[in-house]
Amino acid sequence: MAIEVMLMDNVKKLGKSGEIVKVAPGYARNYLFTKGLASLATEAAKRKLKKLEAERAAKAAELKKEALETARKLEKLELNVTAPTTDGTKLYGSISVADILAAIEANRGIALERSQISFGDELKTVGEHTAEIDLGHGVVVKFKINIAADESSEEA
Image (cartoon, rainbow, N blue to C red):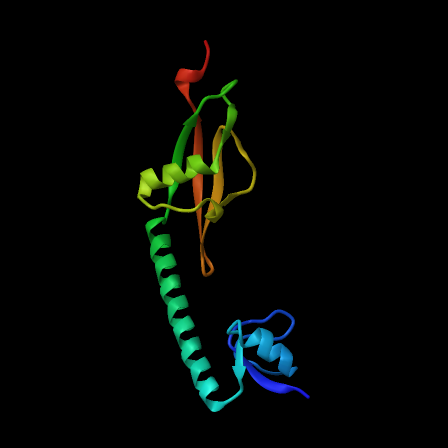
């Protein structure tokens, strides 16, 4: 015998938020209800779910708005970095994500997380490189990193 429950959140291998599914009474009582993942499929539960979905949508819209605002601040970002080189083209080490984060914060005053920045190859040569900042909610900003040789580090 199964009972009908309404999922309040996504449950792996069972369904997505808002779906009404049939489950065993013990599974519902001992797992789904105690974790707040589901409730009995009543009219009151359906109203509660609609309210919860509206709150989630409003929060997601606010977060996307913030991401777009940050993207506007990062528009046409171009970082110029100098680093010591061995022969004028190869760097002694590489430019790290921490270096890029510091440069962005100094340039635009925006603090980002390491996981938001990605670039294809390691930054070990002098020249122009491209990178991306993922601000979440589908907002991605591409920018250029110009690496120049540090003149004071080259040996004559």
